[in-house]
Image 1: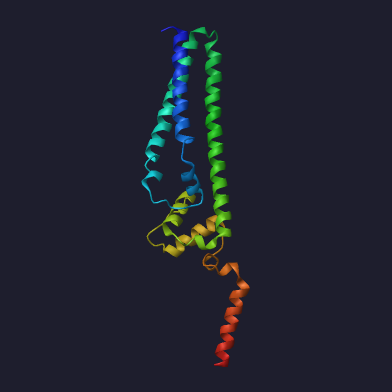
Image 2 (image 1 turned 180 degrees about the horizontal axis):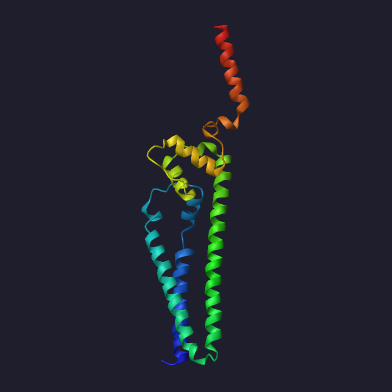
Length: 194
């Protein structure tokens, strides 16, 4: 194959890859996206049956894109005069991309932790609702669960890592302390009268 033919084949592979990626991302049913957004459980296999296909399309699309771009690089490589400079520039791009990825990963972890903290401060009752979710959050934060640790101890460590309130706030007591004080005072008053 000539260099021009390799370039055309590479561009065709890129087009096929873009189609697979777009099909996996864009062409989801809007009603399913809305149901997921509003946290509504749709009791139908249609909501999950395309999930493996979407994942496969992402992988196939990426593969076609990578092959297409590599074919174009290979086709244009003979025309390059200064290969040393080219490899230095390409290597710098790859190193820069890795550094950007590491910074983005750290930033996304920090941002996700911040949003978790804000969510549980606004909805403290949701924290203790699901112990499996608390374990997932703890694993994300790097908190180990030992056999000596009770569920409450582990939840308290996760709360501390997120810098959210204690168990009384998670139960709803932290939202209205005055109301709680009034209930205690009322109970003491009824006991003294009785």
